Image (cartoon, rainbow, N blue to C red; front, side, top):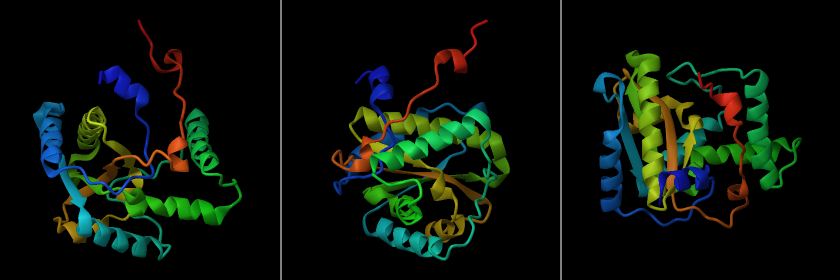
Length: 219
């Protein structure tokens, strides 16, 4: 599949089949992702892939934590309040998702239940957590983002779908304890992945993109 075809066909999948990706294929994909560029070749990412019964155990711990209804406490400062066009796009994305699922704007219970599915990994067979040393700050986050983009494109090239999830970085203490990470290691975000359940309503969601004239200046 050509890269342009991957970019045009890929979307954030929020419902997965139970079928797992073969271990040998996971090894191949994550090995290739090591070719992602990074500032000064520091390669700051430390990725943890959780599958099977261990994934279900982590899911249960995360959901129990979220159900306490305590505010998120991410390792990194990404509590941004979007403004202007960014806020419009944020609302547009949420509206597209909930509309495809038939959830009304004022139905807070159903919206909360849909949100909770983030920490159930949308029933995906695998979840990846992208971590890095906290001191690396924004430069490390840029590198991890490039790495994660490389990874999701490699997955899609092989017919494997994914969803990047900032939500998986909101309650890092649970994940840190589960993965036995040192305190200086931060959890940036996560990614659920596997094979899309194409019949699921959530997977009918599509979002638009800004016109190139609004995004790029050619001088």
